[in-house]
Length: 216
Image 1 (cartoon, rainbow, N blue to C red):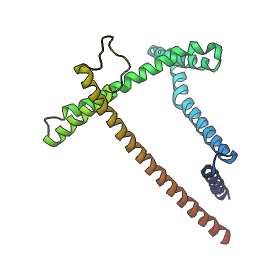
Image 2: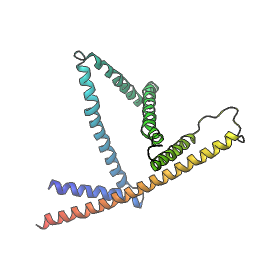
Image 3: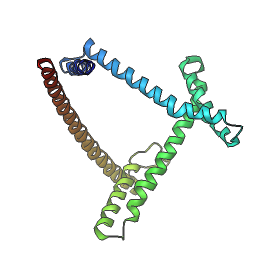
Image 4: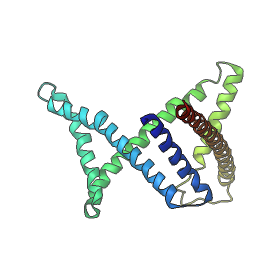
């Protein structure tokens, strides 16, 4: 009985989500709120179990392992993040956000260089075809990175030689970005259609199962 009840609830929630096809409505928002609430609760439990609890165990055993004092730093930064709940104390938590963003950007940049850009450059000379493909990919990656410009020289002149080269590099980088976004959109659309097909098959199969249970 509980299995049938779960199938019926899943079917009703699926219909509630699909009701968005006819416009935003209370049924869709109710299902979306359930999704967000369950996801937040699950993330909170996982964080408590895999992050906070191990940290507290390390701090409790600090007498046996003095090096565990290093766990005080993430605990302190996490406490600062909690201060952003109150508007008056929110600026104090900005330091924790700055540390998190800075460390995350540094790790992402190092990973992108060591895991993507450098392997592309080092493939040149190993095998002719793979080497040229890696070099072309590396050059396109560099053009894409150079297309993001946040500062400009004071003596910059748009009509000088470097200005024209910079324009070409920026155009190539923007072209690569547009192609990438197009490919990502196509992948997301394909994934959405696959999920829709899977969900329709799920509903059909489970309703067949319910009918068999009722008639048997």
